[in-house]
Length: 411
Figure 1 (cartoon, rainbow, N blue to C red):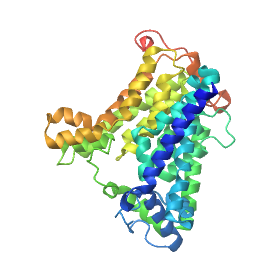
Figure 2: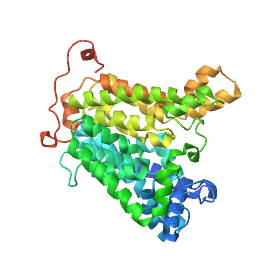
Figure 3: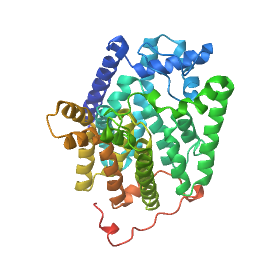
Figure 4: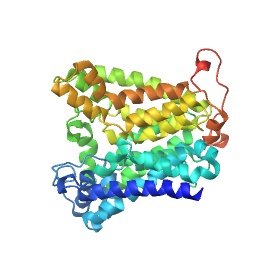
């Protein structure tokens, strides 16, 4: 057994080492360029320069809330290469935490082979395209996923529930959808804590950098063009899909708002129902996918939420259809379908419609995953894996799934 475990972790370590080596040895302008943006933000806070007007060497603007810049100040205390090495802790430690939370039923079933299975899961997570991009760009998305997952899935946290969601929202706004998730699942106290934590972190940043904070909350936040070319295939949000469908003309604003509203209502309703069945990991996964879909811009690395979705689908790996669904989903997110679709569209090698579908692949798969998770027949193992709050936190007790059409969900 120990040989199998050693082999699994040797494979994970070799792959992670290779990923880090590539990230650290890329040409200068491609060497974790988004981390350079964070460092540039930290420098702007230290020196009082224009946080939202200064450019990195790669000609990139700082686009995040001021809290991100304040928390990036320590990155400026060391040389750039040392910051890049240290940043890897913000990538692979959260990946381990998210993988453990997502696949807890499978790991429990593995018994003494659990350490080996965990090593395999880390390896698979490392080669997901969103994770590869997190490493390549020096992004923070898996850390935000970990904050939200820990806040929702730990049964008795040592912190006020909601505090980590509030911090994640202050760093990058998009995790704010979890405040809605807490509210619709009856955890008003936790939602209030999340809102309070967001306000506290934002207020602290305002005290430290009042000018930058005023600029962000009155101007920069409303300018999505600062984020780059939103119509490119890398933007896998609903808005990105519509921008490509209407390109080169912008889609009607009312259309995007209407589509987003429909997806939000249906998605949050699904998350609420799934959570009431005792399937907390399913509710968290759906909410994470909504975070990417509903954002005006969702780059591929924003889809680290897919790890939770794959874990929710896999369950304890007793049911063949769920295992196959999890493997297929993970395999699709290890691909570069949106890039392939973009190439096929602009070279006219295939008709425009299938090329556009490939360009939108990750967003479309995310929509499908919400439906799949909603349709899963919840088992005792799924309920056991819901390490979320007990009744003391205002959580409703799991209720049996109704018979009928919904009761014939895929197992």
